[in-house]
Each structure stands twice: as structure tokens, then as C-alpha cells.
Image 1 (spheres, one colour):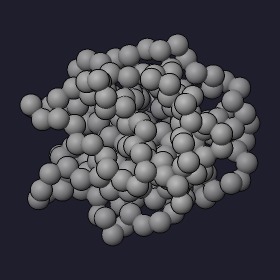
Image 2 (cartoon, one colour):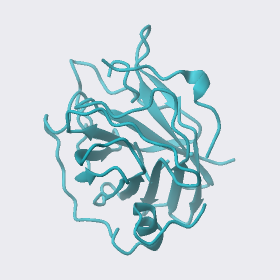
Image 3 (tube, helix red, strand yellow):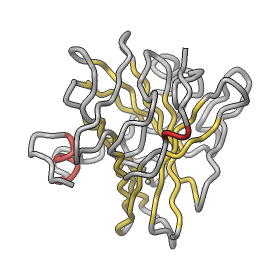
Length: 233
């Protein structure tokens, strides 16, 4: 059973990706050289992969994304991902420290919600994220294990981070944000902004989230859906 986000707990903090990562209701400090965040910073082991998709159930469930896809092995210390280029967009990112026991496979997929690249679920279309500026990309994170995984806040280290590159650029936008799709007990799915903020340099936007919103977790085989928007501030 999914948990709803308590909106009051989703306050300002550090906007997407780094990419990024649905609440489960119905559903800095320079990092060390060995950390997933360090790999993102140096770019060494995080070169974009050739495009790989996984638009089936499993490994995805509910709304299925037809863009790039990667399965990562999540450890208690975290993990990084690097999706292949899809529709001019490349998404990299990391999940920080978490409650995983042993390891867990997590599928990361993206889409832009155009040309039918997000399939309907139970006859319903995917709820578009409408926010300031333009929504550039959506991402889904699906925990393939049987355990519920909870991110753990570590001072000065991102809980989630997304790095989104659009080869066509972001126009006049200079800031980006991220939101997660939540499922309140009353009403339909709702997009709630994450406590994250991001900046744009050239054609790349980096979004880092340093705190864990109330009730935020990765339940078994229930997707978490994220949207990334960029705007001029």
C-alpha cells in the first residue's frame, strides 16, 4: 500500500536531476573519490551508455516509460546510474545512503511524454507535470526487491541527485526543479515539488536533494515517478 506525502513536510531545501527519482500512497562537500557522487562530479565512470530500453512489465509496472533504461545494484552506501541518450536528453544520477539490506536491483527509466512513450495504465493516461517553465523529462525508479528501501540523510551529501543534459539546451531557463507523483487518499494523482533545487550550466542541469521528505521510500515493485522542469528565475 502506498504512502501519501505530507505536503507540509515538503519544504524548500536544496530543483532535478541527478534525475531524477511517486510517493507511495497508492502506490557541497566534495565527495570522496569512491562515492557515486564523486563519479558524477568527475564524469570518469559515468559516460552515457548506449540506448537501452525496458518498456515491459516487469521490470516496469503501472505507467511504462519507453525511453532509456538501466538496472542498477543498490547498496547501503548508494549507487549511480547513467542512462543512454534519448530524444536529445541524457540523464545521470545517484541514490545516496539508504536502508538496503545486502543489495537490491533498482530499474531507472525515462521518458518525455511525447509520441506515446508513456503507455496508459488501466486505460488512464499518465498525469503530466505542469509547473513553471517547461517539463523536460520524467523518470521512474522501480525497486525490484522484496524489501522497502528508505533513503537516509547524510549531512552535505545528496539523498538523490540528477544531472540532465539536453543537447538542444534549456532556452532562457536558469533554474530547474523536481517533483514526485503522489497518490492522496482523496482525489487523483498529484505532483508534489521535492525539496531540491538545481542550476543550469550550458546544456546541463544538476539537481541535488539533501533531505528526505516525510514518508519517502522505495516500496517493492511500485514505481516512483519524477518530473523535471526548468524555468527562468
